[in-house]
Length: 92
Image (tube, rainbow, N blue to C red; front, side, top):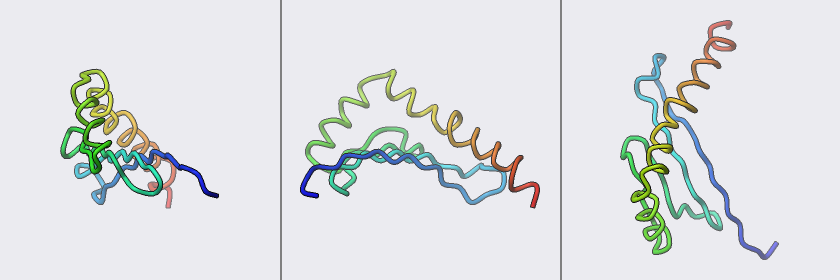
């Protein structure tokens, strides 16, 4: 119970039926505090702690990592939302 906890939560947020307002958010969490976040609206990593700012700078200076994270909106969010809509939402 007295340890360190690291997690990463990625989520897709939208309210429109055509997904035009969809946002991809990828949180890096240590002991329940977000220390780095990628938000597709911002388009880069943002650090919220000293360690997070340092790592966000490294991530933002890595073109492959930044490009991969930016692509998640289409690859992960929209792909899965369209599949869900076709299989579940359009059937109800």
